Length: 377
Ligand code: UDP
Image (tube, rainbow, N blue to C red):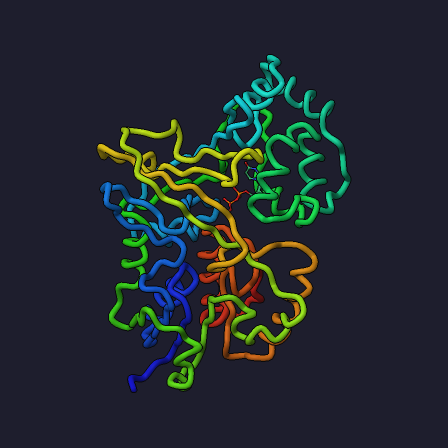
């Protein structure tokens, strides 16, 4: 058996970054990946219509972290992509996040300045000093009508829970704007990798000290890999501990069923992402990949997203009950000094991509370079 210094489970963002960092200081790294490809949920490929599509939903990179931006730029060229989302609300199509245009369209009024919008929000919101859940978070920002039309049922479809059953942080991911800014994110850097995410990951992993073993479930082979300095595990934390704290109450995850179709037209919809926040359809949104990077093809690929309970875990479900179960696993994890739990599934946190990069970079720094205490993003 070949000598390994660092064993990494999972070839997504956290696994790839740690592999690259350890390879760069001369360590021999083996990544074991269950799927038949690298890049985790960022994986993209060119489909039969010649369009670059993401297998696990659109991934929009945005960050205010200069260290992360520099890091990702050393492995790919990027083009600026200021992501926008529109929502079909009944007969109307409006920007999301809520901005002046959204309110004007839905209420059929004519707010025309930031000051008027601030006053409008003051008149319509239901103030909560410290929102305790997703419902209070939205009511506090925009009031009950926009809550019903744009957030309540979308959230039910996405999480199979109403916002009241989720942490405020889930709904607070989306800002409310008092101007006309219709970008989904306001971060300093918003971009997509020119050759796609898979190529970005190929470049990150392109090092003679890194070996990737695909289509291998770590739990099937773990007895073969025992001599290593450190293990980085990026899969679901409950799986690592054989679900021992989930016998009565399971740690919940949401998965997505992606239903893809080819439409024989130049374009299907006017924007890359259209959200459907109402109950009249079961899916949450439709993605049309051709819009990203202004791709050309005679046809177009559209993907409807249906969020489901069963399937590969994509989203942890942030609420107090799951947090309580997760805390039990976390305590177990802390008893294993040579095993590090990294990323969205192992930390049971709804990280954005840049947070996943940052956490992996910080962990490496903390373990190998400085003794600074580690802060989790
Ligand atoms: N959300 C909503 N209506 C929308 C978009 C989002 O109610 O049109 C809520 C929903 O609960 C979602 C959360 O806001 O889970 C965060 O949205 P985000 O776009 O960050 O979700 P992601 O892209 O990670 O699925």
